[in-house]
Image (cartoon, rainbow, N blue to C red):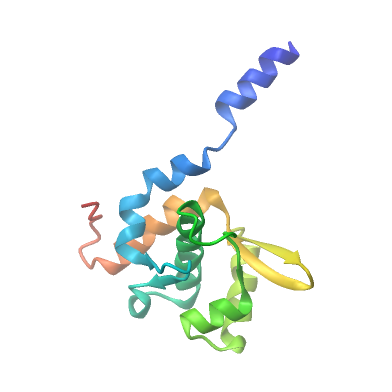
Amino acid sequence: MVANLKQKIIEEMTVDYANALEKNFNLAKQLTRITKDGKVDVIVKDKLTGKENILLYLIGKLYAKEAELTAMNDVGNQELMDELGVPKGSLFPWLKDLREENKINQITRGGYTYHAIALNVLEKTLKEAIKKVNKEGKEDVS
């Protein structure tokens, strides 16, 4: 019975991290770019809210880590402020909202706070951003 449960868990509950990134690659590349040093450029910043930009930046960071352009898939407050061009006074409330909405996870390491997107919101976040950016609401997965 334990072996059956173990197999059921493996088959039905495990998440394939690389598969989620592969599946959503065409959506992600329409919204983000990654530099060779692992930084993320949200190319539709002006069309989305601050919270949406944070989520897209964190998604880009997942791809940067998968491509081995960065060692970590989480991002510190300073990187978010610098790369998204938002002041601390705006960033902190947005991060708090995203945590409370279970869209991001907060990690504390060495006295610093980092953030990573929850994998289960990756696809929904990308699809919602594409719909918002494309006025017709169509997904362009070219």
